[in-house]
Length: 121
Image (cartoon, rainbow, N blue to C red; front, side, top):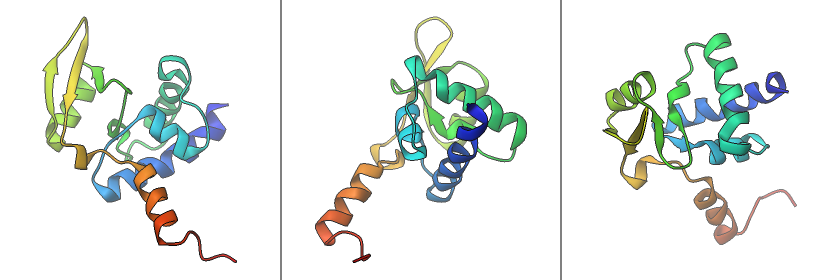
C-alpha cells in the first residue's frame, strides 16, 4: 500500500520544500489523501520508501504530530533548517519552530471559502 501512497506524500514534501515549511504526519497524510495511521505508522512506511526511492526529497520536513523526532539524524536535519531541537523522553527530541514555519492547509482552504470558493462553475 505504501507504494501507492508514497508518490502522493512525495508531492506534499515537494510542496513543503517550496514553501520552506514543515508539517505533521497527520497534515501530510491528509493532504496526500489518507490517514497517518496509529502513531503515524502509515507515514513512517511512506517516508522509508521516499528516503530509499527519492533521496533528494526533504523527508525530514514531516514530523510526528507531537512535534518530536528520533534524536539524531531527523533532529540534525531540522536544526540545520533552523528549528530548535531539545532532548525529550527516551530517544526522542522536541522540535520547536515558529508557527508560521508550520504548514497549515486548513488556512488555505479557509481562504478559498472566504474569497468565494473554486472558480469551476
